[in-house]
Length: 233
Image (cartoon, rainbow, N blue to C red; front, top):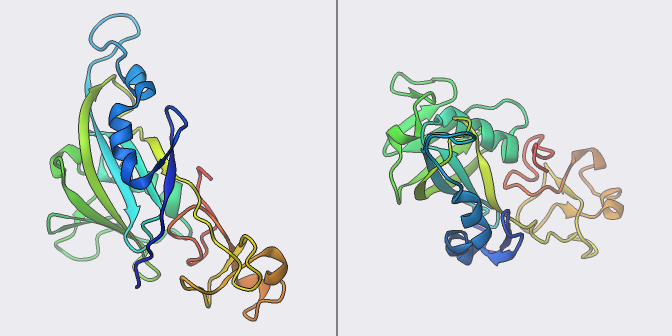
């Protein structure tokens, strides 16, 4: 599959500022609004909880890198928790299988081969700072993601599987191939990076049929299988 190159910006969930994908990691490290939230006291006492290690992960589409997220997740959360989040925010359509490929090992949502491992393992057992690893949702019409462990920090105790979106890409500009207006539909039959994107009006005349159109959503799975959007859209 051809990798799409497209400039991308995203919104910081803390200060609501807009930043280029190439700058968002640095911004999150320096963001004053994030620091104020994270600098709340830790330790014993009313309204406080024990410090917990929290990972900062970058998630992006391997073949559609204009779609990306920066998230925080407790190190004691499991790959299953991370899988559940990725499905909810970007991927889930038909209950397909998924896997993480980490340091040469496969962690599968449902074991297929004897060597496959369960996703019940804690992130802190398989992740290290600077590590890159891949995730695949749906082994047929696959959506493939690249994850990077950016950093870790100590933070207030929270639900062990809680995931926080710190930044997310703004929806890429997708134009109708016929008239150039903003596209509202993507054909699940004929779409590629240059075709199969139509506005509402042109979609009524699309040769594959209007019922073959999926909605344009902010996800690397746009136009695939029966995907119509995530929990966070």
